[in-house]
Image (cartoon, rainbow, N blue to C red):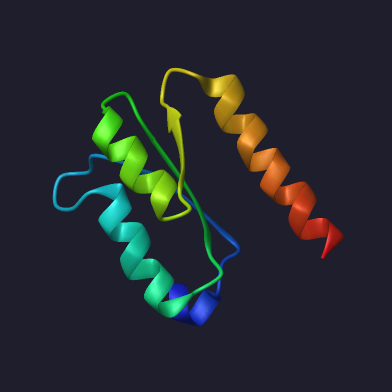
Length: 82
């Protein structure tokens, strides 16, 4: 679906039942290389956050809604400027 729709931003949970959000992001980027990814979860750990940062994936705690909405708005603003 991502290959067909070519989204600009993906919002992913870090701990869905079958695969991590970071692994999902890597899979999505194989179809959409410039995809911006925001991963959120109440279960992020330091190693996961470091891996995400290395891959250019933004992480936000699920309980920090203000940061989540702020990050999505920032991505929207950057995409409008393009």
